[in-house]
Amino acid sequence: MNKQTDSGLNQNYTIDENTSSTKEEHSLSVNTPKKTEDISLNQKTSEPIQYTREPIVNRPDPVADFLKLYDYPNMMGVIFRSDSMATLSYYDQAYQLYKDKKYSTAISLLTNHQNDPQSRYLLAHCYLLNRQFQLAAKIFHSFALDDFSIYYEDACWYYILALYSTYPQSETPLKQAIIDFADSVPDQYRARLKIIRAVCRC
Image 1 (cartoon, rainbow, N blue to C red):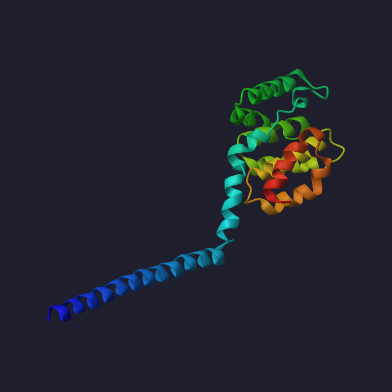
Image 2 (tube, rainbow, N blue to C red; image 1 turned 90 degrees about the vertical axis):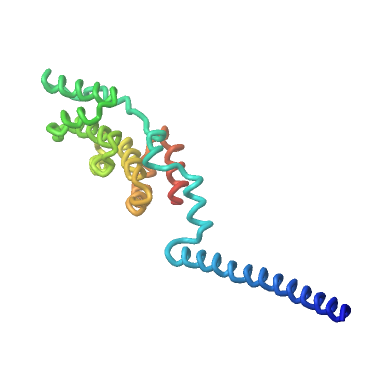
């Protein structure tokens, strides 16, 4: 009887061990498809996980970091034409506000003088630094289309930068702007342009 009981116990123990092992293996086999299933869902709704996450980690946030690519143009402090003292006074005041980073106040002064190219160009920079990127891009684009403008080359760069500031939402117009205007970007901005091209892979 003891032998049979021992044998029965051994038999039961063996069954329990195998059952436990089978449960563990079954549990693993159940969990593994769930992970695979989650990945496949991500692949259906967007790009594969490894593809989408890597650029986000490695690239700067355009909205947060575009100022690192921005440079204050020297030419905006120069008056390129004769004008009345009243007009010079408003422009000097707006330019000082721009230098003091009081962009909203400068914008309120400049919006009434958009027929003046210099005022419009300063206004575009104030829009850009005030994070009104679409308004900035619109003005910079108008200068970038006019290769007779004294602001033409700089505007090509700042138009690209304004579009980059809202990337990836602006991916299509940004890539087109790089195709159209990259060759006209001044040498001093070439290294910064390379950063943008690396981010948008174009």
